[in-house]
Structure formats: C-alpha cells, structure tokens
Amino acid sequence: MIAKKAPNPIDKHVGSRVRMRRMMLGMSQEKLGNSLNLTFQQVQKYEKGTNRIGASRLQQISHILQVPVEFFFEGAPNVGGALRMEGMSEAPSPAYVADFLATSDGLALTKAFMRIGDSKLRRRIVDLVEQIASNEKH
Image 1 (cartoon, rainbow, N blue to C red):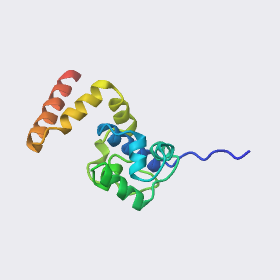
Image 2 (cartoon, rainbow, N blue to C red):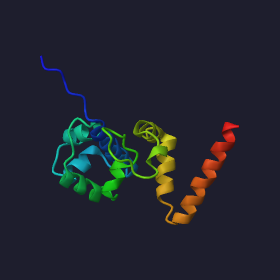
Image 3 (cartoon, one colour):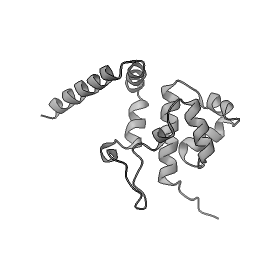
C-alpha cells in the first residue's frame, strides 16, 4: 500500500484562500468549477490543497474571484527558506481566517465590510476595531 503524500503547505494555503474568497462572494464550488470548465470535485481538491493549482489556472481563478494573484499568497507559510514579503509576519494563519469566515458573524462582517467603497473609511474601521481589541486585552 502506498502512503498518501501530505499536501504541500503552500498549496493548502493557496487553496484555503481560494475557498475563503469564493465564500466571500457567495459563489458555490459548482459555479467556480463551471467558470473553469472543471467539476466541483476538482475545485474541492484545489481548495484542500490536494491538487496543485497551476500558474495559468491561478490567473483564471484570480480573474473570476476578482482579486490579484498575490491575494492567494498573503499570509503564506515560510517554507524552505522562501523570502517573506514585508508585513507578512503579522498575518493571521489561514486556518484562523478560514475559521472566522466559517462563522455567520465572520461572513456577515466580511461581506458588509467589502461593500464599503471608501478605502479611507475601511481603514478607519480597521483602526477602530484594533483599538477596541487592544483595550480588551487590558
């Protein structure tokens, strides 16, 4: 019997970011699959990191999900001495983000936040929430 190879941590991270963004848009795996000429099971394997997403496919997914390709690598684990992008060390783990988005409050908050068009207002909201959270620790 051949042991199953564990998914690469980067592939798992990219897949979790695809899932997170797809859920933020309220899009089903089937709808994303149809847009890519894939079955929803193939999308499922991408999202779990079981199947690696090729560069051209990731470009397609970024277009469909309306985010830059870099979005899928934000907060990625530092594997094998890969260079870390500036500001990445503070990024929450993908599991933490996915767990938050899996809650109804997390999804509702994220969807509402994404509808705010004014980037300065969004930044002020983030600052406010960070200030409230830092007061909670004391």
